[in-house]
Image 1: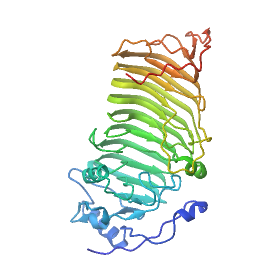
Image 2 (image 1 turned 180 degrees about the vertical axis):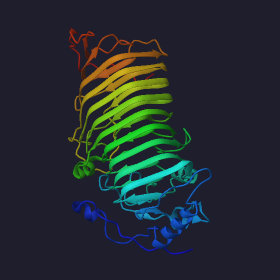
Image 3 (image 1 turned 30 degrees about the vertical axis):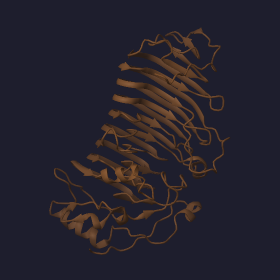
Image 4 (image 1 turned 60 degrees about the vertical axis):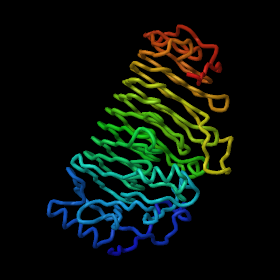
Length: 426
């Protein structure tokens, strides 16, 4: 086994230097290995799976040398061969265990002008062994994503299939100017724990478009840090456009915001989204202790096809990294709009569950018609929410919302914003 040169971690923010010590770890992007890959690329090979290849290899993108044999990608199934990385500074802990986390198959940081493409070829994370060991509680550290890019800018990922990640599939962390286009992400819809598709985390100016995602957790989950660590890191996810996607999640949701959103999430647009055969369609999830905010969120032209719950806002998602969180750090949820929402085979079209601690303000609905599977009274469910409905929608809205006609004239003012008709029994 050839040995690679050791690289030191770079520290994007001086105040978090203590979380990323300068001790070298076994990065496998050695100069000799990169040159070897470049020579292969010049011979029209490159690192590849059948039917695809990578066009470019950049120093700083880390591909484990131990996985590279004869121009093929071979993954060691024993976790002892995987390097350990410090926890993310905005999380403080590994997401599953305190302390460090396992490295990603493909990792890059402090990069500019990154392109990952595969001519529709496949990067297979072979996550089955990781999922089994996770369920059996045999892992001592948090599993690593399939692809993780940190503190980087001008990133293009397109025409590639990512499948069977050990953990989150594609995780851009504190990055700017990212485009993800024509990407397919796959994992079993059951018994593939935490295999989120794309998790933008404290990212700015991002487009995700023309993708198909069917995984064992959220297809997309927008994040920005966990409780007191995310508040201290203070880097929001902002200006993200998600459009022209077909997604499925039988375990979680099509597109989620949170629950780790302590740095804030704002200016998000989700449009032309088709969610099929899923547990939930679009969801915002948070809890006391998160802090931060979710605001200026636009959902437009959504289609729900055989979805258990269509629209969800949940404010009691109580998972915390440790006991150091501040329960009085309550998030702000406001300015959330839903326009042109359609579908069929939906059990509960809307469930917006605010609380006295975390009320939800300025929620708007317009042009909504969702075919339902249960003809029960309370299928448009609300609690501690203030907002409005413009025009006629189906099913009939909850009593918490003001009613306006198509000309934006007030028809009926709600006197029941704090009324709760949340029913989790169906």
